[in-house]
Amino acid sequence: MRVLLIEDEGALRHAVAEALAADGARVQEAADGPEGLYLASEYPFDVAIVDLGLPGLGGLTLIRRLRAAGSRLPILILTARARWQEKVEGLESGADDYLTKPFEMPELLARVRALWRRAAGTPAAVLVAGVYRIDLDAQQVSRAGCPVALTAFEFRLLEYLARNRERVVSRRELGDYLYPQDADRDSNVLEVLIGRLRRKLDPDGSAHPVETVRGRGYRFAPAEAP
Ligand code: CA
Image 1 (cartoon, rainbow, N blue to C red):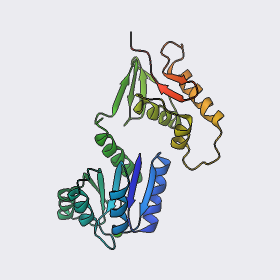
Image 2 (image 1 turned 60 degrees about the vertical axis):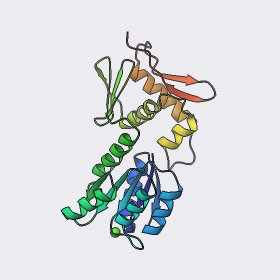
Image 3 (image 1 turned 120 degrees about the vertical axis):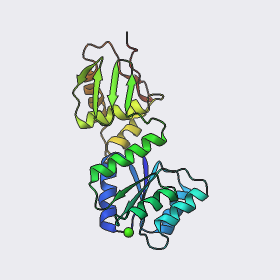
Image 4 (image 1 turned 45 degrees about the vertical axis):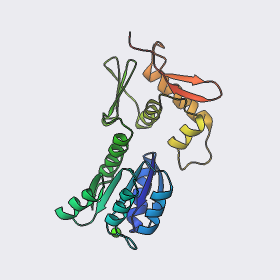
């Protein structure tokens, strides 16, 4: 998930960028309105977070210009002022959701993910594949109705594979997603992790949830339910 974060308060911007990155997003930061508008117009993003009070060009104007130019980028606005009027103006300008400062970081992450899901055309936060049912909001997975206990990290791995189940995901891409800050990655770690995920998801070896595609990567392709 590529996120554009337009916020002029440095400390808040860094904190949000860090939380998003830890959640697996690739974050591009902009500290004023003109830079934000430029990045949003020129580069592909999945979600933008836009502060309303921005130097150079206000958030509302930025959003109106983006929409006028035909952009459908999902936008979450941040507003320091909890005025009802401003929220309405924000949504009327073309934003998709808003959050009032101060906010809790998990709340922001949940909103961003919800926008991403909506845009990706999967409004239901549940993925069903073969005997597996993956609840993305509750972060729970079950096999034929029986809960499977995964760590948060294992769940992230599964979620990524399941979201991209139409294709093969390369080791490199998985590594970038799982350890974005870690330049020096050991591919054995990924193999160990995949192995553990397979054993937990498929203790009797009958459902084959994670297929290894030789030389290319992995694919989430569980056997269909009997
Ligand atoms: Ca501001």
